[in-house]
Image 1 (cartoon, chains in turn purple, yellow):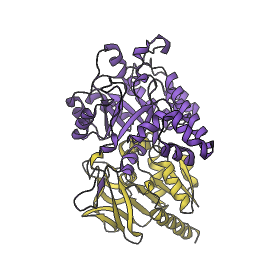
Image 2 (cartoon, chains in turn blue, yellow):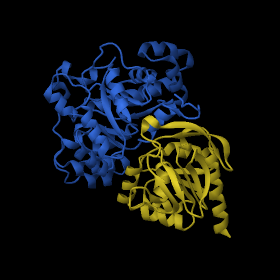
Image 3 (cartoon, chains in turn blue, orange):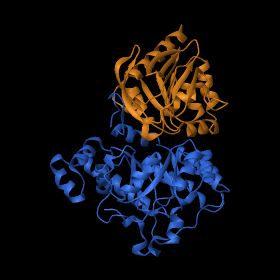
Image 4 (tube, chains in turn yellow, blue):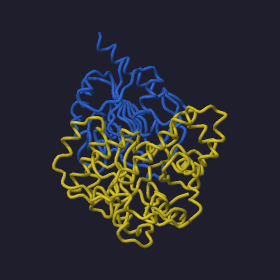
Amino acid sequence: MTDQSGRFATGTERVKRGMAQMQKGGVIMDVVNAEQAKIAEDAGAVAVMALERVPADIRAAGGVARMADPRVVEEVMNAVTIPVMAKARIGHFVEARLLEAMGVDYIDESEVLTPADDKYHIDKSTFTVPFVCGARNLGEALRRIGEGASMIRTKGEPGTGNIVEAVKHMRQMMAEIRKVQNMSRDELMAEAKNIGAPFELLLEIHEKGRLPVVNFAAGGVATPADAALMMHLGSDGVFVGSGIFKSEQPAKFARAIVEATTHYEDFSRIVELSKNLGSAMPGIEISALEQADRMQERGW
Amino acid sequence: MKIGVLALQGAVEEHVRMLEKSGAEALSVKHPHELETLDGLVIPGGESTTISKLMHQYKLTEPIKQMGLAGKPLFGTCAGLIMLARRIEGVSSCHLGLLDITVRRNAFGRQRESFETALDISGVADDYEAVFIRAPSVTDVGPGVEVLSSVDDRIVVVRQGHLLGAAFHPELTEDHRLHSLFVTMVQDSMKMTTI
């Protein structure tokens, strides 16, 4: 979109993807009110995700999870100067339009909320505000980017405090990227068909050896070591959902996760900052979850 | 010649790539001792609140300030420009306080209002593609500061001797002419110190 003079273009691909590039190496934290938002900002978060409930509580509450009350999102926007993200249900383009109208800086079309459409995601290319979406593999990531997502994150398994699914998804994506990069060009169309990815985007992966957008880890990060692990696996940064405010000492925990993300290669430093942090959030073993309770299965 | 890119957070590898395209050896730095071997430093775009907190927490503010005071060239983009500024609107303190300017954070609005436009940058280009993301602007400059570019009446590129600042993200496009200017500044400062 350009203004009347035609000199200023808003919502371009570079402006939307660039916003996510500015978040790299950082930690994005889930918060439910102004007080938590300030704790996150003070700890060095690069952005906050404004929610009514963190994923662990959404899981516990059951029922239908929807976009947060606009009052909560506004309260968080007024409390901090770092960017504010908020979640819309998969396919619920009206919730997304409401968040855009409020001036939210980034929208997460998220499987943490109950999907509003069982077949289609939002056409994100028509929005001025950028979107982040979850993915478990390369095909899913490229479908979301094809729809206009400007940032990808692993789905992991939200609200479990169990890193295993995020690791699985990050490894899967990285392995597929390497595979596509090493394919011969004449194999790409069949691969596009096999993984359900747009051909042009797959060709771009083949040529550049990386996703065209930033890729964060999400869904199960509960400790500083978890965050550092995801950085070693190739994440550009980390989302921490329930991990901060379900821990015993949120402010200290938040700082430690930020420091471990910046200095993920400095193991003695991570040893020091991991001391006396108190208990992390209680975790859930993935096999203990019923199929219907697995949020990562949401999305198509 | 070795130019560092402060790698606490933000668009680090993008700057490294642009500096390399401009003919410099570039590396990312995150520890105070790594600054000692550098001939110049880029402070990248990212979240200014986050970068400033981490700079203080990881004890980088003072050594970077000393680099600047010793005449080593520094280049700040977006958040980096805020780090360099002597005055920040609405805040009583500053971070490095080297560049004699006043900055306004998020001067163009939130992400929704972020934009790209073609800039005329004095001595660099008259068609520079500039990406502004939740960008600051310069609202006042001291006597030794050259204004190299403005968007309407808002100042967006400044230079004060060995210090260069841009409110936008030159690291997000393929155009490395502004990075080339910085590399030249570093070369010039090295000649001066060897004399």
